Length: 394
Image 1 (cartoon, rainbow, N blue to C red):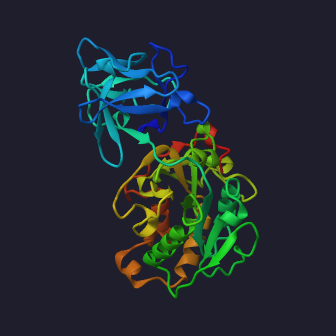
Image 2: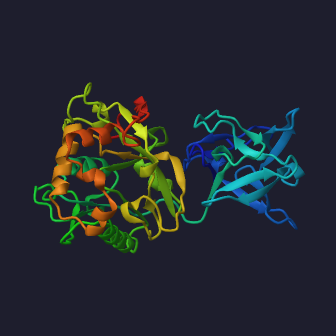
């Protein structure tokens, strides 16, 4: 198995696996034997295990505590029977675990939650932080056959972006576009499998049911299915590889992406040019947990409307896997897209409950306020520059 950090998305790596060496974190990779471990039960002790690197057979051990007793170090040692090599494996929420050394009483800790390869892996008092929670990636063989799907209606700007990106990782026959009656010609071309769907009115409940049913059907033929809205690009941190690499090593039941929204700064950035990559033209994004969605899965999913969460509310967040939301890709186009959506008959429940209200804003002042102040009418979002290493992704 691999031992993955909830904070960074990287996994424990024993490197050359020499006695006395520390451990570090690295991106998961098939060709790094130091990333594979065995949990060996401690005889006669409930929830106690030894964590043994599979190549050299060295055990992860807790080392000396600091003078104040609040922190400590870890290292690889040859004797797995050393009491310091014993760990409590304590379940937390959402298939996450705390690994507590039985001798020191301190938890395995990724010091500041950094994704830097040289970030310190050691021991600290347990305080439930993400850097002290770990996932044990076991069970199914990674990779396998894959499919991607979305639902569209007259998306002549966003569908080409979606297809251009996902066609890099999925064959045309494995790309499924559920077409809800498009009339703009956007679904006439080759490169994907068009699946006509119909309902007299659009509703988030109907959309959820149709996509969920199709996801279940695809999993009868594929190992892994990714479902996204047409304005959603799922991409791992490019320093770890691309989406194809991520799926090749994906061995969980499902994973929750980390939501980020692209923001068009219309006073300094030109209108979107479809002949150029998106992130060549847009330099600002911001985190939005509303779009941290569980979309990549090996199991049939049961979603709430909008696909923002599972019905059982389980999450398996990977901070290295982003969902890049393109709703705010272009200010003027966003208003045009809302006009198209408003002309479509909408389910009464959606209207009564305000579901998808942001997709029907036509008043210029209200639209502007929503575009640049999505959290509060009084406070703008806290934006971040898009890092250079993301610029080539989409």
